[in-house]
Length: 335
Image (tube, rainbow, N blue to C red):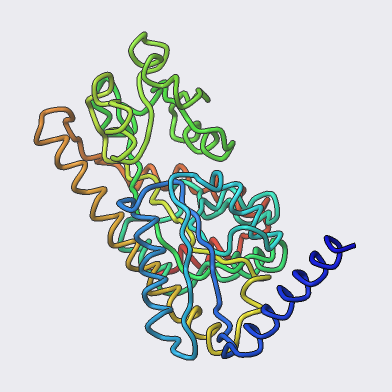
Protein backbone atom coordinates (compact mmCIF):
# COMPACT_ATOMS: atom_id res chain seq x y z
CA UNK A 1 0.00 0.00 0.00
CA UNK A 2 2.85 2.34 0.82
CA UNK A 3 4.36 1.76 -2.63
CA UNK A 4 0.99 2.40 -4.29
CA UNK A 5 0.54 5.56 -2.28
CA UNK A 6 3.99 6.80 -3.26
CA UNK A 7 3.33 6.06 -6.95
CA UNK A 8 0.05 8.00 -6.74
CA UNK A 9 1.70 10.88 -4.92
CA UNK A 10 4.53 11.04 -7.45
CA UNK A 11 2.07 11.06 -10.32
CA UNK A 12 0.04 13.79 -8.67
CA UNK A 13 3.20 15.81 -8.04
CA UNK A 14 4.30 15.41 -11.67
CA UNK A 15 0.89 16.45 -12.95
CA UNK A 16 0.86 19.39 -10.60
CA UNK A 17 4.30 20.52 -11.73
CA UNK A 18 3.25 20.26 -15.35
CA UNK A 19 0.14 22.29 -14.68
CA UNK A 20 2.16 24.98 -12.91
CA UNK A 21 4.69 25.11 -15.73
CA UNK A 22 1.94 25.39 -18.32
CA UNK A 23 0.05 27.92 -16.27
CA UNK A 24 3.05 30.12 -15.54
CA UNK A 25 4.53 30.11 -19.05
CA UNK A 26 3.54 32.92 -21.42
CA UNK A 27 1.53 31.54 -24.34
CA UNK A 28 3.89 30.99 -27.30
CA UNK A 29 3.03 32.67 -30.56
CA UNK A 30 1.88 30.18 -33.16
CA UNK A 31 4.54 29.81 -35.86
CA UNK A 32 3.79 28.77 -39.43
CA UNK A 33 6.07 26.08 -40.79
CA UNK A 34 6.38 25.36 -44.51
CA UNK A 35 8.25 22.33 -45.85
CA UNK A 36 10.09 22.40 -49.16
CA UNK A 37 11.78 19.60 -51.09
CA UNK A 38 14.49 19.38 -53.74
CA UNK A 39 16.16 16.48 -55.52
CA UNK A 40 19.37 18.52 -55.51
CA UNK A 41 21.86 20.26 -53.22
CA UNK A 42 22.10 23.94 -52.30
CA UNK A 43 24.05 24.77 -55.45
CA UNK A 44 21.35 23.69 -57.91
CA UNK A 45 19.23 26.33 -59.66
CA UNK A 46 15.97 24.77 -58.41
CA UNK A 47 17.10 24.90 -54.78
CA UNK A 48 18.32 28.48 -55.23
CA UNK A 49 14.91 29.39 -56.68
CA UNK A 50 13.18 28.04 -53.57
CA UNK A 51 15.65 29.79 -51.26
CA UNK A 52 14.88 33.08 -53.03
CA UNK A 53 11.16 32.37 -52.58
CA UNK A 54 11.71 31.84 -48.84
CA UNK A 55 13.72 35.05 -48.60
CA UNK A 56 11.08 37.12 -50.41
CA UNK A 57 8.18 35.72 -48.36
CA UNK A 58 10.02 36.29 -45.08
CA UNK A 59 10.81 39.90 -46.03
CA UNK A 60 7.21 40.56 -47.07
CA UNK A 61 5.31 38.92 -44.19
CA UNK A 62 6.12 40.45 -40.80
CA UNK A 63 3.06 39.42 -38.76
CA UNK A 64 4.86 36.35 -37.40
CA UNK A 65 8.05 34.41 -38.10
CA UNK A 66 7.74 31.83 -40.88
CA UNK A 67 9.80 28.67 -40.48
CA UNK A 68 10.97 27.16 -43.76
CA UNK A 69 12.25 23.58 -43.59
CA UNK A 70 14.02 22.45 -46.78
CA UNK A 71 14.79 18.78 -47.50
CA UNK A 72 17.58 18.38 -50.08
CA UNK A 73 19.17 15.60 -52.15
CA UNK A 74 15.95 13.61 -52.67
CA UNK A 75 15.47 13.12 -48.92
CA UNK A 76 11.70 13.20 -49.45
CA UNK A 77 11.76 11.35 -52.76
CA UNK A 78 11.71 12.57 -56.36
CA UNK A 79 9.78 15.33 -58.11
CA UNK A 80 6.90 13.01 -58.96
CA UNK A 81 6.60 12.25 -55.23
CA UNK A 82 6.55 15.95 -54.33
CA UNK A 83 3.66 16.51 -56.74
CA UNK A 84 1.74 13.58 -55.22
CA UNK A 85 2.40 14.91 -51.70
CA UNK A 86 1.28 18.44 -52.61
CA UNK A 87 -1.88 17.07 -54.20
CA UNK A 88 -2.67 15.32 -50.92
CA UNK A 89 -1.55 18.22 -48.73
CA UNK A 90 1.02 16.01 -46.98
CA UNK A 91 4.78 16.11 -46.28
CA UNK A 92 5.73 18.72 -48.92
CA UNK A 93 4.28 22.23 -49.14
CA UNK A 94 6.35 23.71 -52.00
CA UNK A 95 8.82 22.52 -54.64
CA UNK A 96 10.07 23.01 -58.18
CA UNK A 97 9.08 20.18 -60.51
CA UNK A 98 8.70 19.22 -64.16
CA UNK A 99 5.26 19.75 -65.75
CA UNK A 100 5.41 16.11 -66.88
CA UNK A 101 4.65 15.01 -63.32
CA UNK A 102 1.35 16.92 -63.37
CA UNK A 103 0.02 15.13 -66.45
CA UNK A 104 -1.59 12.54 -64.16
CA UNK A 105 -4.01 15.26 -63.06
CA UNK A 106 -4.08 17.80 -65.89
CA UNK A 107 -4.33 16.84 -69.55
CA UNK A 108 -3.06 20.31 -70.51
CA UNK A 109 0.13 20.23 -68.40
CA UNK A 110 2.42 18.47 -70.97
CA UNK A 111 2.08 21.44 -73.34
CA UNK A 112 4.67 23.22 -71.19
CA UNK A 113 7.25 20.53 -72.04
CA UNK A 114 6.50 20.46 -75.78
CA UNK A 115 9.42 20.98 -78.21
CA UNK A 116 9.36 24.16 -80.31
CA UNK A 117 6.86 25.81 -77.97
CA UNK A 118 9.15 28.86 -77.95
CA UNK A 119 10.91 30.49 -80.90
CA UNK A 120 13.89 31.55 -78.79
CA UNK A 121 14.86 32.61 -75.27
CA UNK A 122 13.43 36.12 -75.73
CA UNK A 123 10.06 34.64 -76.74
CA UNK A 124 10.23 32.21 -73.79
CA UNK A 125 10.71 35.07 -71.33
CA UNK A 126 7.93 37.17 -72.88
CA UNK A 127 5.49 34.25 -72.72
CA UNK A 128 6.19 33.69 -69.03
CA UNK A 129 6.06 37.40 -68.18
CA UNK A 130 2.72 37.70 -70.02
CA UNK A 131 1.31 34.82 -67.94
CA UNK A 132 0.22 33.12 -71.17
CA UNK A 133 0.29 29.77 -69.36
CA UNK A 134 -2.45 30.85 -66.93
CA UNK A 135 -5.14 28.55 -68.46
CA UNK A 136 -2.84 25.58 -67.81
CA UNK A 137 -2.07 26.80 -64.29
CA UNK A 138 -5.82 27.17 -63.64
CA UNK A 139 -6.43 23.63 -64.90
CA UNK A 140 -3.69 22.25 -62.63
CA UNK A 141 -5.14 24.13 -59.66
CA UNK A 142 -8.60 22.71 -60.37
CA UNK A 143 -7.53 19.14 -61.11
CA UNK A 144 -4.45 18.66 -58.89
CA UNK A 145 -5.14 21.23 -56.14
CA UNK A 146 -1.63 22.62 -56.70
CA UNK A 147 -0.85 26.29 -57.29
CA UNK A 148 1.81 27.34 -59.81
CA UNK A 149 3.45 30.33 -58.14
CA UNK A 150 6.13 31.18 -60.71
CA UNK A 151 8.22 29.70 -63.49
CA UNK A 152 11.87 28.73 -63.20
CA UNK A 153 13.82 26.73 -65.81
CA UNK A 154 15.91 27.95 -68.71
CA UNK A 155 17.99 25.03 -69.93
CA UNK A 156 18.12 25.06 -73.74
CA UNK A 157 18.07 21.69 -75.48
CA UNK A 158 20.23 21.11 -78.56
CA UNK A 159 21.18 18.12 -80.72
CA UNK A 160 24.61 16.52 -80.18
CA UNK A 161 25.81 14.06 -82.78
CA UNK A 162 28.69 12.18 -84.39
CA UNK A 163 28.47 14.51 -87.40
CA UNK A 164 27.49 18.16 -87.98
CA UNK A 165 23.77 18.81 -88.46
CA UNK A 166 23.29 22.32 -89.82
CA UNK A 167 20.23 22.19 -92.09
CA UNK A 168 17.12 20.17 -92.95
CA UNK A 169 18.98 18.01 -95.48
CA UNK A 170 21.51 16.96 -92.82
CA UNK A 171 18.66 16.36 -90.36
CA UNK A 172 17.05 13.93 -92.80
CA UNK A 173 17.46 10.34 -91.67
CA UNK A 174 19.41 11.30 -88.52
CA UNK A 175 19.05 8.41 -86.05
CA UNK A 176 18.43 10.28 -82.82
CA UNK A 177 17.40 9.28 -79.31
CA UNK A 178 14.20 10.81 -78.00
CA UNK A 179 12.69 10.92 -74.53
CA UNK A 180 9.55 8.87 -73.99
CA UNK A 181 6.81 11.47 -74.60
CA UNK A 182 5.23 10.64 -78.00
CA UNK A 183 5.08 14.31 -79.05
CA UNK A 184 8.89 14.39 -79.25
CA UNK A 185 9.04 11.42 -81.61
CA UNK A 186 6.22 12.88 -83.74
CA UNK A 187 7.96 16.25 -84.06
CA UNK A 188 11.35 14.84 -85.05
CA UNK A 189 9.65 12.50 -87.53
CA UNK A 190 8.13 15.62 -89.10
CA UNK A 191 11.64 17.10 -89.36
CA UNK A 192 12.74 14.10 -91.40
CA UNK A 193 14.88 12.56 -88.66
CA UNK A 194 14.69 8.92 -87.53
CA UNK A 195 13.88 9.19 -83.80
CA UNK A 196 13.96 6.22 -81.46
CA UNK A 197 13.20 5.94 -77.74
CA UNK A 198 16.19 4.71 -75.72
CA UNK A 199 16.69 4.74 -71.94
CA UNK A 200 18.71 7.75 -70.81
CA UNK A 201 21.42 5.66 -69.18
CA UNK A 202 21.94 3.76 -72.45
CA UNK A 203 22.47 6.81 -74.70
CA UNK A 204 26.28 6.95 -74.36
CA UNK A 205 26.75 3.30 -75.38
CA UNK A 206 24.15 3.55 -78.14
CA UNK A 207 26.07 6.38 -79.81
CA UNK A 208 29.45 4.76 -79.14
CA UNK A 209 28.38 1.50 -80.78
CA UNK A 210 26.63 3.15 -83.73
CA UNK A 211 23.08 2.18 -82.77
CA UNK A 212 22.20 5.90 -83.05
CA UNK A 213 24.05 8.96 -84.33
CA UNK A 214 22.67 11.58 -82.02
CA UNK A 215 20.61 12.61 -79.01
CA UNK A 216 19.45 15.91 -77.51
CA UNK A 217 19.86 17.53 -74.13
CA UNK A 218 20.73 20.64 -72.14
CA UNK A 219 24.37 21.55 -71.59
CA UNK A 220 24.28 20.27 -67.99
CA UNK A 221 23.17 16.82 -69.14
CA UNK A 222 25.81 16.67 -71.88
CA UNK A 223 28.48 17.57 -69.33
CA UNK A 224 27.28 15.26 -66.55
CA UNK A 225 26.92 12.18 -68.78
CA UNK A 226 30.04 12.99 -70.85
CA UNK A 227 28.04 12.78 -74.05
CA UNK A 228 30.63 15.06 -75.67
CA UNK A 229 32.97 12.05 -75.78
CA UNK A 230 30.74 10.22 -78.27
CA UNK A 231 28.73 13.09 -79.80
CA UNK A 232 31.08 16.08 -80.02
CA UNK A 233 29.21 17.91 -82.82
CA UNK A 234 26.59 20.16 -81.20
CA UNK A 235 23.88 21.57 -83.46
CA UNK A 236 22.26 24.69 -82.01
CA UNK A 237 18.69 23.66 -82.83
CA UNK A 238 17.41 25.25 -79.60
CA UNK A 239 14.31 23.13 -80.02
CA UNK A 240 13.20 23.37 -76.39
CA UNK A 241 13.67 25.69 -73.43
CA UNK A 242 12.64 24.16 -70.14
CA UNK A 243 9.91 25.41 -67.84
CA UNK A 244 10.05 24.26 -64.23
CA UNK A 245 7.18 25.68 -62.16
CA UNK A 246 7.61 26.70 -58.53
CA UNK A 247 4.50 25.24 -56.96
CA UNK A 248 2.66 24.97 -53.66
CA UNK A 249 -0.02 22.68 -52.33
CA UNK A 250 -3.33 24.55 -52.46
CA UNK A 251 -4.37 22.71 -49.30
CA UNK A 252 -1.42 24.37 -47.56
CA UNK A 253 -2.10 27.74 -49.19
CA UNK A 254 -5.76 27.82 -48.12
CA UNK A 255 -4.95 27.35 -44.43
CA UNK A 256 -2.52 30.31 -44.37
CA UNK A 257 -3.44 33.85 -43.27
CA UNK A 258 -4.59 36.15 -46.05
CA UNK A 259 -1.58 38.43 -45.63
CA UNK A 260 0.79 35.51 -46.03
CA UNK A 261 -1.10 34.31 -49.11
CA UNK A 262 -0.60 37.75 -50.66
CA UNK A 263 3.14 37.65 -49.95
CA UNK A 264 3.38 34.17 -51.50
CA UNK A 265 1.52 35.39 -54.60
CA UNK A 266 4.00 38.27 -54.95
CA UNK A 267 7.11 36.21 -54.20
CA UNK A 268 6.35 33.36 -56.62
CA UNK A 269 6.82 35.22 -59.94
CA UNK A 270 9.90 37.04 -58.61
CA UNK A 271 11.52 33.81 -57.44
CA UNK A 272 10.67 32.19 -60.77
CA UNK A 273 12.35 34.99 -62.71
CA UNK A 274 15.40 34.70 -60.45
CA UNK A 275 15.52 30.95 -61.16
CA UNK A 276 15.29 31.52 -64.92
CA UNK A 277 18.19 33.96 -64.83
CA UNK A 278 20.32 31.49 -62.87
CA UNK A 279 19.60 28.42 -64.98
CA UNK A 280 19.82 30.10 -68.39
CA UNK A 281 23.07 31.75 -67.33
CA UNK A 282 24.54 28.50 -66.02
CA UNK A 283 23.45 26.67 -69.18
CA UNK A 284 25.35 29.13 -71.37
CA UNK A 285 28.45 28.98 -69.16
CA UNK A 286 28.55 25.17 -69.22
CA UNK A 287 28.23 25.12 -72.99
CA UNK A 288 30.97 27.74 -73.44
CA UNK A 289 33.28 25.84 -71.06
CA UNK A 290 32.90 22.59 -73.01
CA UNK A 291 33.64 24.41 -76.27
CA UNK A 292 36.70 26.13 -74.78
CA UNK A 293 38.04 22.78 -73.56
CA UNK A 294 37.66 21.35 -77.05
CA UNK A 295 35.04 18.82 -75.94
CA UNK A 296 32.33 20.18 -78.24
CA UNK A 297 32.19 21.96 -81.56
CA UNK A 298 29.05 24.03 -82.11
CA UNK A 299 27.19 24.50 -85.39
CA UNK A 300 24.42 26.99 -86.14
CA UNK A 301 21.29 25.40 -87.59
CA UNK A 302 20.81 27.59 -90.66
CA UNK A 303 17.23 26.62 -91.53
CA UNK A 304 15.48 27.13 -88.22
CA UNK A 305 12.42 28.77 -89.84
CA UNK A 306 11.97 25.69 -92.03
CA UNK A 307 12.34 23.48 -88.97
CA UNK A 308 9.65 25.44 -87.10
CA UNK A 309 7.34 25.31 -90.13
CA UNK A 310 7.72 21.53 -90.37
CA UNK A 311 7.04 21.07 -86.66
CA UNK A 312 4.06 23.42 -86.38
CA UNK A 313 1.27 21.16 -87.78
CA UNK A 314 2.30 18.47 -85.28
CA UNK A 315 2.30 21.00 -82.44
CA UNK A 316 -1.16 22.28 -83.39
CA UNK A 317 -2.61 18.76 -83.54
CA UNK A 318 -1.09 17.90 -80.16
CA UNK A 319 -2.39 21.09 -78.53
CA UNK A 320 -5.85 20.29 -79.89
CA UNK A 321 -5.62 16.81 -78.39
CA UNK A 322 -4.71 18.32 -75.01
CA UNK A 323 -7.55 20.84 -75.13
CA UNK A 324 -4.98 23.63 -75.24
CA UNK A 325 -5.27 24.88 -78.83
CA UNK A 326 -6.10 28.43 -77.71
CA UNK A 327 -3.16 28.46 -75.31
CA UNK A 328 -0.77 27.53 -78.12
CA UNK A 329 -2.25 30.20 -80.41
CA UNK A 330 -1.83 32.85 -77.72
CA UNK A 331 1.78 31.78 -77.10
CA UNK A 332 2.64 31.86 -80.80
CA UNK A 333 0.99 35.30 -81.15
CA UNK A 334 3.39 36.85 -78.63
CA UNK A 335 6.13 38.70 -80.53
